Length: 371
Ligand code: NAD
Image 1 (tube, rainbow, N blue to C red):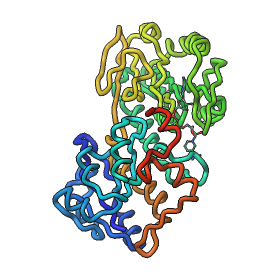
Image 2 (cartoon, protein in one colour):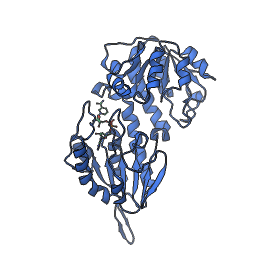
Image 3 (cartoon, rainbow, N blue to C red):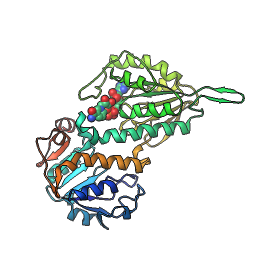
Image 4 (cartoon, helix red, strand yellow):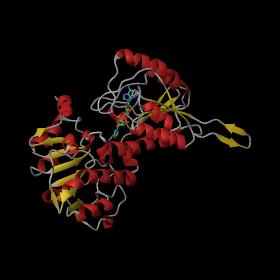
């Protein structure tokens, strides 16, 4: 197998899906590696740090040699057209994002694995890119909030007395939310957490935060949440309103796979917040959890600042790339022996993450969303 890595088609993407340590392991398993010059520049990894890799100048030189591509995000449409049938593509391919892209992959007879589709079972934890990158995002949200906050996060005692700690509310206690809670706690804030899945109470409390109980419970399938009914939304808004009004910092991370992010914080709730409060809406890219969020911008609503960051893992590309590459290696590495890739179609993790194969979109949930 020849594994190729292209320069990201997205100029703002700084992550690289293959790091030197992982290149070494792949080479030891007999894989050949070819990368396009510049692919690791965003992550500040010099090409010389990859002695196992052949570096080439152009995309064509990569795609002509490689029969497997590792990528952070979806490939450009022109790249897809140029791939040989049977090429394997692995990365965060945004499977729910575009029917055209799904068709291009299927029509080109590309075997693609979208890491968003990875089954959330114990065995797959070491391969879970949504989790590793979610941890980066949750951490980054808190750093952004702390930088914008007009208050200290920790309680501070100084010569003239004591400064009270900031109150941070984190909505959505999945991987990113729990990392945000842990990070805000490390900075010394008073933290509250909220999620619709009842099992998150214990997880929130184990990090030293208080759980906000709204009485709404909406566990879905596969460890994910389901969408709320209108009645549940009303009940949630009522009970959450109080916690939101008291917060100095609000961080929202709520998501439902394949769906637009749930709108949880209404305009009235934002306007009910304290002057100087800071909101970081991690769901900005998928529609936002907060009314008024604009992706990649900072907006002022009354006395409140709402920040809608996008692609947070790319802000810390050294760590996020390392995590990403290890996840990919754990996913596909076991199927490479003596330089030969043998995909096992009875493996539930491989089949679960299959986006397209044999000329069609394979994943049932994706087919349903794309129609
Ligand atoms: P996610 O990114 O899909 O969603 C983020 C959070 O938003 C979730 O906790 C969800 O419950 C919450 N949410 C959705 N709608 C909401 C609403 N209206 N109000 C408040 N919160 C809402 O989730 P995720 O972080 O990718 O993962 C969810 C869970 O999956 C994890 O917490 C974990 O239990 C499980 N998981 C398992 C594995 C594994 O076993 N391999 C790996 C990763 C995650």
